[in-house]
Image (cartoon, rainbow, N blue to C red; front, top):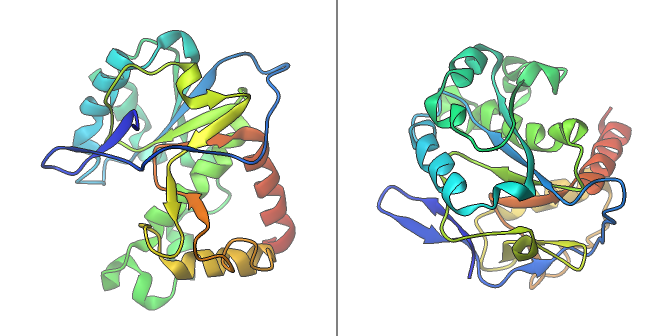
Length: 238
């Protein structure tokens, strides 16, 4: 059973079924046997931000502190001071650093908003650029991570049972919440199609409807794989 859940407002619901292993095995040599926690948060998120104390409280209670190298809190520049003073973050039992968006992305959210199709802009009722910027930030933060794996979190995630390093990394491989591309997924199929086209992946995922794919947060990411993806994106998209 998953050790994490999302708080849907009514109660916590488990995420995913049995974990599936990443195909890439990352050696621990030189990285230390710890992980980095990454929280992407913004005060403008009226649903997620108020749940920050729940996330931090359950992490402090159930996550083995000795497995955490540090926690990086990625947030808009304007939110940095408020987050440094946030009581829930101040009580974290491990080192914590606020990472402003501008230190990771070369373009502002407003610039990204202008690149969106009109129907996807926040002003038209779409998800807007803030959501997409968070996806980019969760990859870009790999450049600040000094452990082999980092666990990406959102403010509405809860840790529901005692969790140690051996629960999430087995045989040098990180586990992830599995979804089935064709039926059991919270992702839009066109997102996978667009990613396939951008990366010239030649249908390695999209051609297999029963393929198991990574789900939503919490997500344990390989730092090496994320850095490789950044290099690939820089090479294809500029």
